Image (tube, rainbow over all chains, first blue to last red; front, side, top):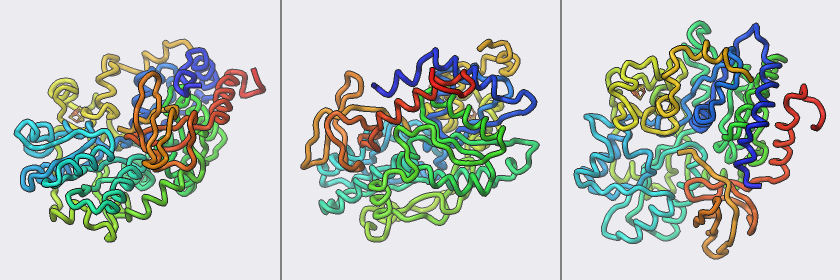
Length: 385
Length: 78
Ligand code: SF4
């Protein structure tokens, strides 16, 4: 087994589609939000939406770490380069995200700043070892999936007594964000947008397990199905959500049992708890200030905290005028509702973060041509499954 | 960004806790710092250079079986 091809088989997709068609009640609407950009990507790439009856709508959520990072934090990263002359290491996706004043890390690099794209936190540590005379900062972003590798790097740097390595921490927490979406006025006001159920994050859940979602499945009375990232996983999870909604249940179910357990990866959780603590308040693009939704480095490891080492100020920066990323991230608008979509804003020349990241909704719409269909619904009704 | 891939462990360096894994035909060096007792031939989910978790073959087969049963009214095996 390769754990990939098996979960992309066409014949099985047809079967799942038939089941969904049969079980979805044609008298009701099912709005299912996928929190993760990985699901958004799978839905577009494999045309999963086309296999669904017209009363099932996928609402794309904020689950892309690149998309939800507020501009002020990227401005901070550029400050580190320009004012403190550090070597800034980061994952590739961050390079083209627009910052204030039409800047980006890529433009800073073109102007001579030392930005290095890394694949792993191990690479960032190596760069610090190889450049003892320079300060090396790892620009850390990501959800619970990407946090444990940062924790490992900080612990290693601590053990090795590295004096020139620190982390600019922007790690965020999934459950707090989902809760904030359900708390937002647009979602509470059923008329503008309603979300009936959630595809739970797959890789985030490999670390934190399925348990953290139980609280709000109950509190907000919405079903959650932890769903793998392959197209068949997404379809099976849609079926499981539809069944729960039909039966009036709101539980946490797990479709992705081959990697996710209820408890998650305890070793990784302990490492994270050793190095990080919850940040009281953190700004998310699209969701604003969300309480207890991010992590910061514990005082014990303060020497490795770039925010303290370089005394980074909080920057309030506003989004580029006309960019609808904030509403798109809350599932309130679609990329095609943005006036800049496909005209001023394209993947080659992105104006907002949702167009930069391949997991962003705008990039998915653009790459897979959804925008060419003037009316998705009429088109879909004609699709035979 | 959140992309993670299934990979097969080919060899393990116990001292550094690093492993060589195969993703299809591509070989990569990754860290095993986040997983407990992984061994050669195990499949792990890898992300930004780390194994996040082991993949359970038994569970994967069970999931595929559930897919195969779809379209039969959720009933018995095919
Ligand atoms: S199309 Fe571009 S400008 Fe419009 S919301 Fe998407 S990223 Fe922002």
